[in-house]
Each structure stands twice: as structure tokens, then as C-alpha cells.
Amino acid sequence: MKNPLFYAKILLFGEYGIIENSKGLTIPYNFYQGALKFEPSEIAEESNAHLKNYAKFLEENFADTFDTKSFSEDVANGMYFDSNIPQGYGVGSSGALVAAIYDKYALNKIDINQNLNKEKISELKALFGNLESHFHGKSSGIDPLICYMNIPLLIQSKDDISTIGLPSANTDGKGAVFLINSGTPGETAPMIHIFFEKMKKEGFRKTLKEEFIKYNNACIENFVKGEYNPLFANLQKLSAWGYEHFRPMIPQKLVNAWKTGIDTDTYYLKLCGSGGGGYVLGFTQDYDKAKSYLKDFQTEVIYKF
Image 1 (tube, rainbow, N blue to C red):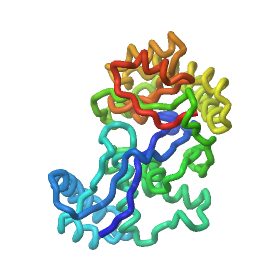
Image 2 (cartoon, rainbow, N blue to C red):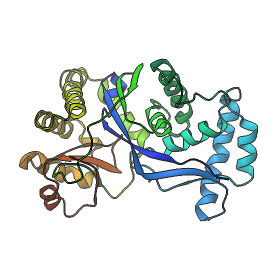
Image 3 (cartoon, rainbow, N blue to C red):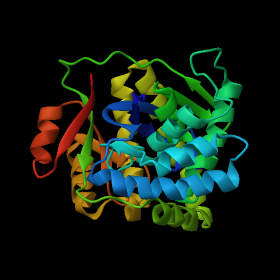
């Protein structure tokens, strides 16, 4: 059985903000991938057990949307999700799984290669949010959407999502967007709980709306246009805001490195996904210089300019 691969995703901008209708920019990340398979292995057993639970979830909630009979039979025959996407790292492990299941078992699948408009994208996002809620309690549906479509997406608002072209990468460029590994996975649900507790305070709501969303949206506009000087001016503000207001979500091992980037103006860090662990995103105009400050951490370039 040859099944299609589904890739990881990276939300470059918009973490937490998209819950409050800020803009977001998300890209596929082909370094990590997963596919539904039947070949027995050690990881197969654990994954298959998760799929058995998911089969019940689909049967109870989506029997009219999926071929739940075929899915349950395949799971009973040992099907599992063969994936190297790290779990709890903010790069879409559950999103890729949901996308793979939708692709194979949805009854009236929306074909992304035909007449895809904003309405269809919005419809997919809503369904994917419900499908991924099994893993996180609450999901925007963005992760499975990007994993399924495998092209950069611009999120204008909750109901306005479109495909977008990005400036071509320059493999010889000094600048880079990169991942830093915090060394431990994070859990989405507790981080989202912290965010919603913060949202109960008027001061936090005000600064999120007036500062975070403003810097976030400006960064997206600069990045999409390839305007790197204003991008880094806005990234500095975004990273400083995150250091002050998202501190509980910053992986403990990276708190000092986050501050060093701001103090030296060498690189700027921001959350990748919900935080708490996993990866953090870095942006720099001189990757070699940034690496000298981050020599104690594992870094991974995802885009050069």
C-alpha cells in the first residue's frame, strides 16, 4: 500500500494571536513527514493503539463524514501512522495525522487541486478543527489544513484564509529563519489554559490587541514582501513583547538565550506553536553570528535569505 506523505508545518507568525483574530502565516516543513502504513514495527504498536481510540472518536462524531468502517478495519489490521514529526514540538504532528486520515477516509473529500476558494478552505479548516480537538481539547484547524494543503497559507482572520507566495529563498544568504530545540516536548493544553487565564485580565487583552497583534501583522507584511530591514525592527518589538508577556510559555532552558538575542540585536526568538517546550523560532540577519551565541543549542535552518 503506497500512501501519500504529509509534512510538518511551521506557524511563522500568529501563535496565540490567531485565537484573537490576528493575522497568521504558516508554511509546510518537508524535513518531517508521516504516512499511514501497515508494516509491523515497534512504533507501529503504540501508534496503532492511538488510532484505535481515534476510530471510536470518528465513529461517535463523524460517521456521516468518514468511511469509519474501512478506517476501523484497517486499524484492526495493524495500520499505524509512520512519522518522524516530533510530538509536542509545535510542528504539527497531530495535524499531519488528521490530514492523512481525511485524505484517505473522508466521504466527500474537498480536492485541493480543483477550484479551491476561500469558502472551501474555511470549510476544511472548521472540519479539521473538530477532528484535531480529540488531541488538544481545542483546535483552530490550521495545523491539519497546512499539512493537508502543503502550501504557504496567509490567515487574515478566522474565516479568511488564502494561499500565498513567499519570496524565493537564497541558499547563499547570511540571514535565516531557524528552529532551536529546547530539548523537551511541550504540552499544548496547559499552555492554552495559561493564555486564556491571562486573557481574563484587561491589561493583557489591551497589550495583546494594541501591541502584539500590531507587531505580528507588520512582521507578516514585511516577510511576505521581502522587506527585511523593517521586518527586523518589528521582530525586535515582537520578541521583546513575547519575553515580557509570554514568559510562562517560553521553555525554561531558552529564557536567557531569548533575552541575549534582544540585548545583542543578533537574533530574535519567538514561540513556535504553543510553547512550553519543543521548538522555538529564531530570525537573524547573520546566522553564523547567531550560532556563536547559541552554541549550546541544536539549531536547524528552515529558510535562508
